[in-house]
Amino acid sequence: MMKYGYDFYIVAGFLAGSILFGRLIPMLLYGKDVEKESEDGNPGTFNAFVCGGMLCGILVLLADIGKGFIPVAACARRLGMDSWKFALVMAAPVFGHAHSIFRKGHGGKAIAVSFGVLIGLYPVSHPLLLLIGCYLLFAVVLPVKSNTRKSVYAFLLFTVLSIFTIPHRTILLGCILMSAIVVHKHCLKANEAFRRGEEWRLE
Image (cartoon, rainbow, N blue to C red; front, side):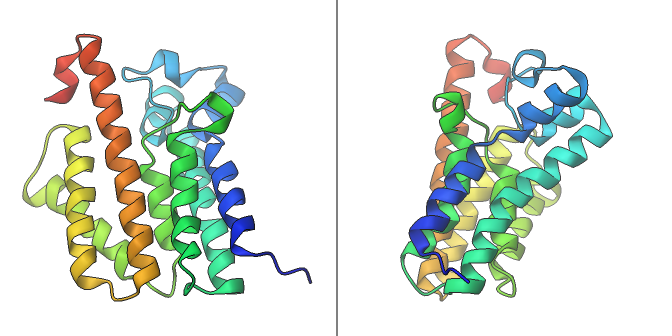
């Protein structure tokens, strides 16, 4: 059986991430373009639920999680997590989703795919539980109304806590890279909305 190197999984992860299922599945099932019909134009899981309904949303959620999970899990199982390139394997699907090569650099906010990447680290579960905890903090304990702020705060806190609690250096680097991509993408989306005079989305 051919054994692929880390570079293969980096490229495969980026290409898989670039497939925007949040736009593709609603269009195939219902002929709906979520980038045009949703309020914020984001081709993600939330808008798939809003524009396409429960079935559509679940399919998009599973697909977005899967495109983060599969390349990371396959690479971890076949090559291990010790090379610094494994951090790039973790970041590749997230970057692909945020800056899709198939959409000329346009993409989504990369939340579901980030969770997929962390699920792919199993049996290493601490990073996944950490990110879940950060989201619960800003959703339940210290509720933040804006989804943009909630995600930015959660990933920033996730980064800080990761530095102090994740001993595996390559996984830590991967978590930092993922967080940087997600936070940067959210800031870009917020800035675009602000330029269009849609300040209410930043509240």
